[in-house]
Image (cartoon, rainbow, N blue to C red):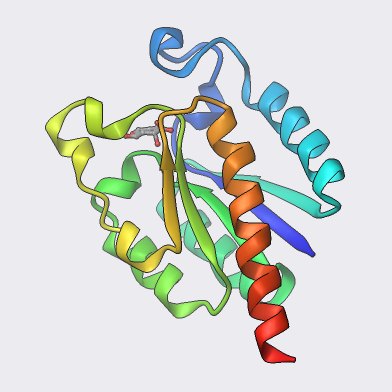
Amino acid sequence: MNILVINGPNLNLLGRREPGVYGSDSLNEIRNEIINEAKRLNVDVEFFQSNHEGGIIDALHSAMDENDGVVLNAGAYTHYSYAIRDAIAAIKIPVVEVHMSNVDARDEFRHNSVIAPVCCGSISGFGKMSYLLGLRAVKEIAEKRADDKI
Ligand code: DQA
């Protein structure tokens, strides 16, 4: 079981970016916690971060052949990228949407996710724990799909 964790625009600045909203951990520190959780869950985990829509789309396409599932924090692209939505719909592996902040408690434009309908589910508002919950969720879904195919 190999899961890809994708982080979108501005998430490379975690720790320095609006700490009141996103906390004080850097993306690297969060990555280390995800690695520990992955060990506990007995899954392999890979990471990708890009500030560019096309980079995220390319990573999703590659994941179809190389990974069993994706945990995706698409950042602000969540709210308007039909191209990322189409890429998620195109690949056959499960994608779980995650957000550190509670997007429904924030600005109106963050209340809509154009990717949510093509993701397996969404986790929002638990800070870095959103990634750990997302990893657990996508692992269970990918395992169930593998079992169903047997
Ligand atoms: C975010 C929420 C988005 O609205 C925002 O644009 C981000 C981060 C989150 O993790 O809470 O960049 O995805």
